[in-house]
Structure formats: C-alpha cells, structure tokens
Image (cartoon, rainbow, N blue to C red; front, side, top):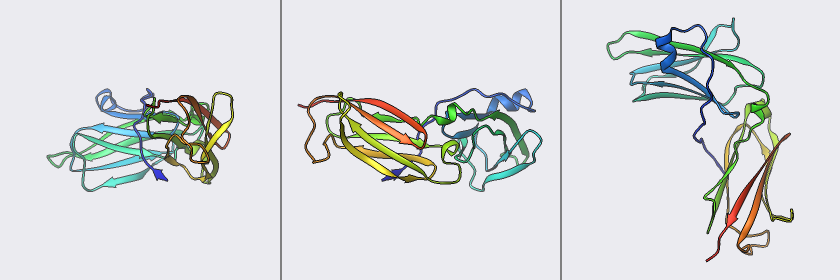
Length: 211
C-alpha cells in the first residue's frame, strides 16, 4: 500500500480582497480532491494561512523556515464540502522586507467534491499498471470511509479485488499485475477498474496487451 501526492488540474478561482499584482502571483486551485496553494518566486521564509469564511480571521497552516526555491507550494487535504475558504501567503523577501500575497477565496463545490480523480497508468499495460485515486475531505470528513478497488472483464464479471479497507483522506495507489484472483494472467483484452469510496463511484478502462 502506498499513499502519495499527485499533480493537480487547475481550477480558476475568484480573487477576493487582493490587489491585482498580488492576486496574479498567488494561485489556489481545486480539482475535486484537494486545494493546492502556489506562489511563484524564491523566498527565505513563507507562511500559508487560511480563513474559514469571508469574515473569519486567518489561521496559520504552515510556517516554512527553510523557504522555497522558484515556487512555494502548500496542499490542503482538509477542505470540506460547501465551505468557503480564503488563502494567503506571507513571505520574507530577499532584502528582509515582509509582504503578503492574496487572499484568494472560493467555495468547495459539492459536485466536484465527489470526484476521486482515479486513473490507471500505464495504459495499455503489458506487465503492471498502477491505479491511483483520492479520498477527499469532502467524503471522508474527519473519519475513515469504506474503500474498494476491483478489476472487471467486459461481461461485468469481477476478475480480482485489489483493495478493500476503511481509508482516511489521502491519495492512494495500488498495483495490478494483470492476474486474476487465482494468480493466472488474464488474456489480452479490455478490462475495467472500479473505485468505490463511500458514496462515490468511478470506473475506468484498462487495455491488457500480451506478447
């Protein structure tokens, strides 16, 4: 079992209460799984803060004393469904001056919050493939949720169960070596993986190639 962080697809968000110059440099993106806050530049130190509402005060999520090179990045796994958040980054400039970027704010959309962002790669597969998915806070909240990953053939028959457990929020991977539940290699053809996390359900296609 592995838990990893994957790349995000950007979602444009509204800018709230920030100057144009600062807002263009600070980005907050959400892909239905997690929020990613980014600020381009190199800074000796930076602080990421979040306000849980339009009128709420800002609380520190991370204080990096080691700074960042080329880009400061923070991933927020605990954004909850239908909530409105504002993010900002406070930095120490190379000359010692302190500067604030943001805030940027947006609402976590309930529909997008059910996205598991599952995928299988490589696809087509000749040996192994890795199926990845996310358990977002919009589903798990502060508890673990039943999670199941299985492989099916084109007739809908289950070929193999790859994962069955209660999972907290996070990003996961599991490998499939192209064999069924008895360890026998499956023949060339099209198969499907199904990822079920609580009420969310996603299906993807996998193509198996044999020499």
